[in-house]
Structure formats: structure tokens, C-alpha cells
Amino acid sequence: MIDEHRIHWAEPLNRLATLLYRRGRLDESRALCQLVLAVKPWHFGALSGMVLVCAGMGDKAGARLWADRRLPPMQPIGNNSRRREWVNRLAMEASRELGRAEEMVLESFGERDDHPMRYGGGGAARGEADRFDRGRSGGIDSGEEGAWQ
Picture (spheres, rainbow, N blue to C red):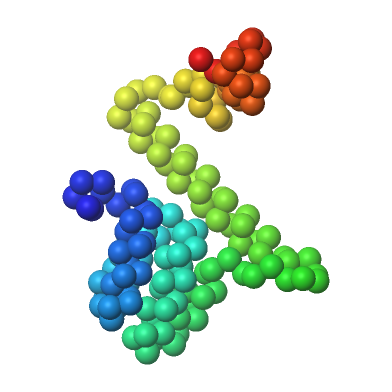
């Protein structure tokens, strides 16, 4: 699976990590969770998996470390500042990763992806994406200008 899809398809890797954990193959499960987290550091399942694997291996310090990296639970009262900080931190990490990926595209292909259907494109591209969304929400046969075809 990894040879065919590489590590960028996180869900099956995380599911395999879970199965390995349930079979007691903790080292292999840990390695797969780490692969998932290398691609998606915010992946809830892999973060929780790391806590379980570390606890299962008797690594209390590791379990605490990974537990602290998980999304803090929503508190019924209070401002949930820990949760907000977690979201902001991971959003910044994701933004940096996207920037790195764009730089790799520029290095490899020599041009930025300004396809009009991509979100995050320039003003004109954003307008095209908005028209695309309006057309979809209006239905395929809506007759609205920009309807999805």
C-alpha cells in the first residue's frame, strides 16, 4: 500500500496502525502513526494512537507528550483558550506546509498553479471559484450564469 500510494494517503495507514495496535504489534503501529503524523500533524486518530501505543509500551512520558499534542476537549464553560491555541498552531503549521509544497511546485515546474478553479488563487481566480460554487448550489440545470457544467 505504501509503495503504491506513498505515505500521503493517511487514512488507510492510520487504520492499519490501529489494527496493528489491537494485535499487540506496538512497534509497527507506532511507526505507522509517525508516518501519518509526518504528513498530517493534526491527524486526530494518529495522535490518539500514539498515546495508546506509548501507554501500551509503558512509556508514560511519551504518552503524556502525545496526549498534550491532541486537540484539547471542548469545555462547557470558559473560553477554551487551549483549544483555540491548538487550532491556531496547527493552522499555521498547515499553512507553512502548503507554502513549502508550493515552493516545490515552483522549483519543479517553474510556475505557480493559478488555475481558476483553485481556491487561494488571485482575485480573478477567486471570482471564478465563487461562480463555480454558486452554479453548483443552484443545481446543474439552474441556468444561472456560471452553473456547473
